[in-house]
Length: 364
Image (cartoon, rainbow, N blue to C red; front, top):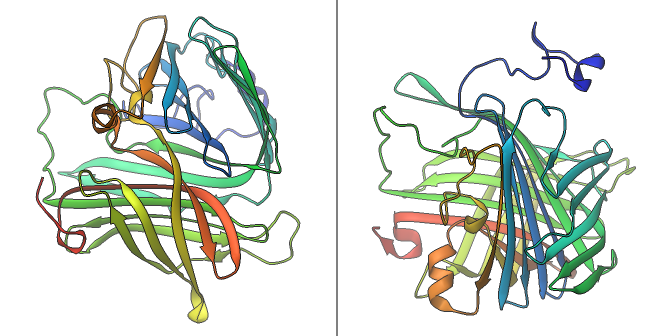
């Protein structure tokens, strides 16, 4: 099927642009976007997932306010024939200037949440190392990703009240990934299940200061065996200083006694020629991603066929510990980050499952 993408001189396989190189059902193209004020009172997160081999595109937008309420709108539609439109119901994703400006918007709807936010990059995108793995002979993951940090502007409207976004006091982060995605959303039936690790850690950090930014992505087994690592430091757009790849990261997280949610951390970024940057993370707030479809919540999971057109909305009392225990797993924790005399802001995600003796966990 021809789409407007086929007009451009960018084909990579002998087919039209609506087809990836493989028919694997796990093939996913996803964008993640986060915008938050530096006080920690308001945090917005949105994501779009496109699944060409399932004929689905889905999305959600979530806004957490002052640690009290989280508002969500979720939507899904049949991908084709509008394969070249990043619009799902009232949601629109627009590339204003590639690798520089993107717009996320949610039009007025019956669920009381809407927004129009422009992301303006402050730094060049950091490209992660490709992630590839096989399990019992089958490709489990084959994905690439980049992350980018900048400033947002625009507005968010909740229950009739409009909050203006001041680029001086707000920060934004985004990523874009594509390929065969690990897990792939909805579990596949009728196949041999994979093993559940005894213990596992995932940690992702994006942080920006005025004069530099950094990101890393690590996965470890309970004994510290590193399964995956990628990271880098970048400098403002137009700077003559080149990106510095990270060689390693040491992490020292603290957790709540009643759940595996971070209360703070010290992180050491390591680079070539003895480069070392010591970061101290202070959580300011959180937007919970599970209700948006990560790992499934309330009958919605990323990549699940919901019909030709579907939308719903949720309001969650995140001041209620029982609600938080129900929705917390993969969480965007908004942080103030200090490095010496510098103060920056960013997002960390950390998941620890099973045993992890270093952090005091002995099992599931």
